[in-house]
Image (cartoon, rainbow, N blue to C red; front, side, top):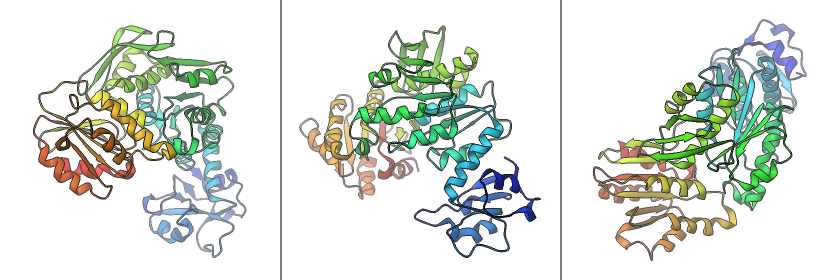
Amino acid sequence: MKMSLTEVARAVSAQNDISEYEDIDITSVAFDSRELTDGALFVPLVSQNDGHDYIQSSIDNGAVATFWQKDHENAPTDFPIIVVDNTLEALQRLSQYYLAKINPKVVAITGSNGKTTTKDMVASVLSTQFNVTKTHANFNNEIGVPMTILDMEPNTEVLVVEMGMDRPGQLDFLSHLVEPDVAAITMIGEAHIEFFGTRDKIADAKMEIVNGLKEDGIFVYNGDEPLLASRSESLPFKRTFGLAEDDDFYAYDIAGTEVQTTFKVNKYSDVEFKIPMIGEYNVNNALVAITIGDLYRIREENIQKALLNVNLTNNRTEWIEGSKHEMILSDVYNSNPTAVKEVVNAFTQEKIDGRKIAVLGDMLELGDQSIELHESLAEVLDPKEVQSVYLIGPDMKYLYDKLSSVYPSENLFYFKADQLDDLYDQLNAEIYEGDQVLLKASHGIHLERLLDKLTN
């Protein structure tokens, strides 16, 4: 981006006169004083740590100006400041101004599971024929979405923005912030059920993504999910994806190996699509990208190549070779019951000569239903398919108790959340070349540390 400081001030209705700084140009925006580049506007957010305390650090790291929340005293007198009522709201207003200035098509994506992978797939497909900016990592909230917008290059033609949600009203705000041309929901699961209570209420909150949809905007959703089908009846423009033949885009002839999945789609019956990941659930994610690709008239050969070569965000489901030449299926970024069941089912599809070992950590934010939902994972764990199971975290103790009558004691292990090193020692002693290990947990369990130990 590039805007003059006076343009930024007008965009956010600055409460002070900055005409003496009219020659200053802003080339980036940052809220972390450690991650600035020369020409940056610093945004001192007020949360657990007050960003105003780091103004000098931002100056030292290249900031040329800063927002300043008017209720804070001791504002710098020898450095350009833009005085605003609220620095977060100013960041959001600036992003809206810049979005309108660049005026790309906007594709917004949410879902209980798979939204980041889907975002990567959609961006990969659209990038074959358009200049695309996509959400970095998981910058998908009230701070991350504005930062994604402000990260756009001036030649951006399509913005693919991921939207997260952990409370009612959040997607309503984000949807109105970006006013999408296309809004997509990957699926409805149990993620954040602690805050919502039921899947029905989760579906209500997810549907907020259409609230800011442009008048001629299109809603893309999983047609196999009744909760979405019933809630989308009044929307004039929509496309469905899934596995049922009455979906607009449905997959069939799905087959997989330990590293990729192939499938066909009714719209492109002569094309075999391949994705470099396992599981039917990832086929659904790919269908979102195919559906949106079709809306934007992406050529079928470009869709095919883009899905095969998609660049996925780190810590999503990926195969990594361990130090003992075992293969590790790592999915350590987040977890919920639907996601665990899907990845375990995919993990067990490919037959191997070695053993299959599952390491599962707590699924967080499940609230009062946590015990029942952790116990429910027992239905996908079979000693014939997964020979050993390692569980870690307080709520995984309930799954351990459930599995105690199914698995022999020498193949079932439980560890407290602070016993990750002990888990590694036990697991490492069991692993041999040719084995496969699944790692799946919410990020708060930090199985990425276990992954580091197994691969180094």
